[in-house]
Structures are given as structure tokens and as C-alpha cells.
Image (cartoon, rainbow, N blue to C red):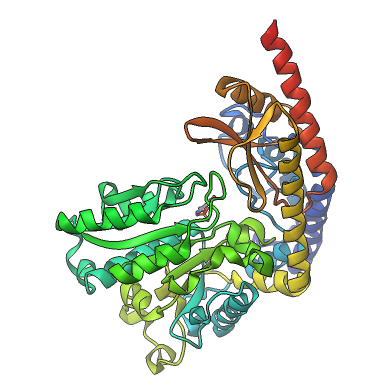
Amino acid sequence: MSDNKNFHMTPDDFRKYGRAVVDWIADYYERIESFPVLSQVKPGQTRGLLPSEPPALGEAFESILKDVDNLIIPGLTHWQSPNFFAFFPANASGPAILGELLSAGLGIQGMLWSTSPACTELETHVLDWLVDMLGLPTKFKSDAAGGGVIQDSASSASLCALLAARERATEYGSNQQGCDGRLVAYASTQTHSSVEKAVKIAGLGSQNLRLIRVDDRFALRPDDLVKQIKQDRQDGLIPCFVCATVGTTSSNAMDPLSEIGGICREEGLWLHVDGAMSGTAALCPEYRYMHDGMELADSYCFNPHKWMFTNFDCDCFYVADREILIKTLSVLPEYLRNKATESGAVIDYRDWHIPLGRRFRSLKLWFVIRYYGVEGLRYHIRRHVELAQNFARWIGETDRFELVAPAPLNLVCFRHLGGDTFNQQLLDRLNQSGNIYLTHTTLNNKYVLRFCVGQTHTEEHHVYQAWRQIQETAKELEKSDLR
Ligand SMILES: Cc1ncc(COP(=O)(O)O)c(C=O)c1O
């Protein structure tokens, strides 16, 4: 620690320790495969290593950084490991991390255009770029009636979409009087749980969320949706919102947007499309078929913080009509009044999401897009899909495993033929080995293993090694089952 008397870090020390932290991160990525992917600590173990009292006197930065190695690293699951195949990726990259650092360094608040015009304008610009990069309908662009905004997460995006749908359906009455228990939302049984959370928070009540059955590809059945909407109207309820998913969490199922969108138009319902992970695949024209029908959507979101090399958090949320969203969320206290807002010539993103404050998240996205270029991003997405497809092919070639769902992109759902308990044990053994990390789901009441390829540095040999380990571990288990 320096001997300066005001306790702050001096610019010189900041340079010195800043370099040390960047070196630390670079080293971390170089040695990441030496750590067990899934943290092996027991509950309470990390806290048990921490002093019960905070330090009265400041400590040397070197010792703080050393404790990251000693105390924190053992308690981490290494999401950036190329052997991480669990859940969905939360991938990151050098340019994103540096953009994040810069954003922290600038430390600005972009709640209003006037509180940092570049924060708002870069965000608008990059989100417009992404409309073209993903081949999305141009109605989502800021020069049309819509526009995009960065949210912290797809969960927040769904909530904002639902709030806007609620207000549109009640002519902004529920903002004033609250909900009367008659608004109804629809999603499939495979929709991410964030929609149920949104329905609770938005005051619709979870009993007013209808989970529509899916077909044999785990995609929402439009015929069932129509029937349910009609039934609800007959019962005096007010259908207002449908969430369709491109790439469901469990199995990567693609809901049929064109048919669902047609129903929403006919019935006057808001259609929100959740493309949290799979949306990024639309960078490649050959995968854009999953977005057929997107022109019928009122809102859409996808997470660069899942599969587009932009560290958490960064969800891109688009609406076709920004006025509805703004009217839903805008509250204007005196202390936020300013000339730029009153001129009507600027965007104030505070009216596009729940919090007031917002940091400069578009910097990291801008860095990523500029550093990789569209071609660089496409290259990696295609590569991940190819690696997952190889894995799916290997599964199909054995007689001891089966594929349990279609694998359109980078997620493969499979199981050993030995049954649920066998698959549970297989998963536990694989994860305890520390070499790889996979997670599970249930599909058609069967316990299923998920293998998702999407980490920044995952290569062919990682996937191949994982497959070998899965086979070998299964063989060991088969033997112990026979005994
Ligand atoms: C389809 C889908 N939607 C939403 C989410 C939630 O994402 P977030 O963590 O950004 O809220 C997930 C997370 O896996 C997801 O798979």
C-alpha cells in the first residue's frame, strides 16, 4: 500500500495494479483448464476462509489479489473453461472484458441522454447495427417506430415486454388502478421460468399464465394456443401476451413464430420472442429460418452475454413501437427534467427498463463487434454448431446412448439407455471428475443430459475428450451395475 494519506489509490498505483490485474486475467485464461470446471467446495467453505471482521486499515493490493487465488478461485465454477458444457454459455472475450473495464473506468450514468450523450447514442447505434447483423425486421430500428435497448438480462426484457403488453391491453389503466385478475399470458411448457416470474411481478398472477402444450419437437402447439385463448375469452378474461421462444432452455426447441404471430395479430395479443441464447445464431444467414415470422413480433430479445462473446450482463431488447414501452415505464420527477428531454429530440433510456441508473454497457458490445467483425463472429458460431453436430452424430452412432430431442444448433440432449438413475449417476461422476461440466433437464418425464457448446475457446479436442470421458464413465458404471 502507498503511504498517501487520503486512502485513495494514486494514478501511478492504479497503473501498476491495473497491469497486474490484466496480467492476472490473461494468466487465468492460460491456466483455466487446470481447475476443476465445477467448483468442489462445500457450502460455507468460502465464507469460513474470510475474516469475520472487515479490515480497519487498508491492505496492500498485492495481498488482496493473492487472496483471489487462495480464497476465491477454489469456490469458482469456471464458466469460461473450454470444458464447460453446462446450462447455456456465458461466454466472454478480450475485447468485451476491456470494454467492461473502460466502462467501469469512465463510471458514467447513462440514465438520460444529457447525463452522457455518447452512452445513449452509441447504444442506439450498435443496437441498430445488430438489427442488420441478425437480419431482424427493420421496424426494430430507431429510425422506424421501434428501437433497441440493452437490458441486464432476458428476464428483465420479458418483464418489460409483459408490462408494455399489459398497458396496451388496458389502455394504460393497470398502471393507474393495478390489475383486476383478468389479464392472461401464454407461453409453452418449455418456456424459460423468467416468464412465470414476470407474470408474478407484473401483477397478472401466476394462475393467469397458461402453459401451452408442445409437439414432439418440444415447440409450442399453435392449435392449443388458439383453443386456450378462445376459452379464456369465453370465461370473461383478457388475453394480452404470448411469449414464443427461439431456442428453449431445456432442448433448444424453436416455437413456430409465423403461426403464433398470426394468432397474436388476429387476437390482438402482444408477441414477445425470447431468443436468449440461440438468437446469436442469426448472425449466420443459414440459421435465420428460426426467425421466420419475426415481422409479427412486438418485441424480441437475445443475449450477447450468452453466445456472442460479450461478458455478462448484456441483453438486447427490441420493441416495434417504442411509444408503448415508454408510456408504460416513464415517470418524470422534477429533478430529472432537462432541456434535451423536453426537446423530444433524444432518447432517455431510463424509460426503457426498470432501473433508473445505467452503465455504459454498449462499449463492450461495440468493442466485440469491431474487434471480431461480423465475419469473425460468424466463424465462431458456425464452429460451435459444427462441434455440437459432431457430438450429436457420435451419439447417434452408438447403441448405448440416444438423442432425445432435435439438435438444431449447439445444444445436444441425450441419454444413456440405462434409465434415469443411471443417467443421474453418470452426470454426477462426470461433474465430480472436474474435467467437464454438464447439466440435465427432463423431457417427456425422462432424465436427460444436455451438452451445450458455446464457450469462447472450446475446440474440437475438448468436445472429443468430453465424449470419450462420457463413454468411459458410462462403461465403468455399467460394470458396477452388473456387480
Ligand atoms: C430461453 C431463455 N430465456 C431466458 C433466459 C434467462 O436469461 P437471463 O439470465 O438473461 O435472464 C434463459 C437462460 O438460460 C433462457 O435460456
